[in-house]
Length: 236
Image 1 (spheres, rainbow, N blue to C red):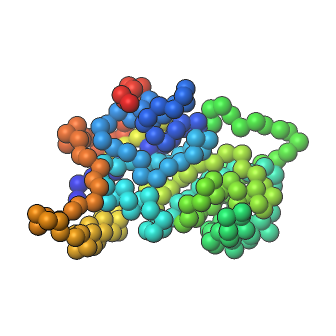
Image 2: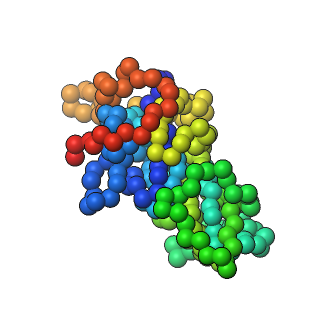
Image 3: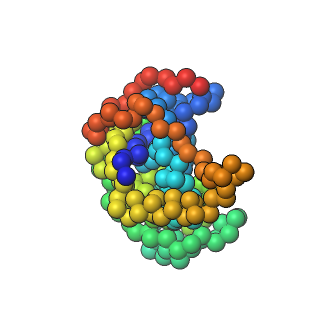
């Protein structure tokens, strides 16, 4: 299967969409490749890894909670986080919409990551600390609500990884094409086979296909290197 995947290091206060929304910055200010769309989302006030694809089944697998691709976050929290709070995150935290599933949580050193623009407000009297948190759910603003629930509000949130894909060697505001991992490629193949078997024939004897994200001609001759941030606007 040829590459249908883009890794983008989303800056702070950028919408995870191409269509304009007021005066907010969108993906159109950074990515000008035709027919690629986000697979899942990342909040406006969060940073880090966002995956985009032009392939319908791949988009479904990445975005759907049924496939449970683990997501790893680097989180700066207010205060010196305690071992008790880490254990609470590991066991599951009760939120308004239910108990979260057990997470992989640990304290980490401050990651070697570009400063946020604008920077996190610094208060000399209140220390901060960093944790790594890996979850397989997709509740709304889940990480922020989890750290607040154990007494350590999130100050900065960076998504470092989705499944096997990471931010390594992708500067903020830049993107690159990548190949699928063997496991993900196999999942896509199996998903397409299942969909083909369950598609019901219509009156003309043809099978109804699921929605496909269209493939653009501009994708065919692409290179595989890291691409600089682009400022060309996509038409709505």
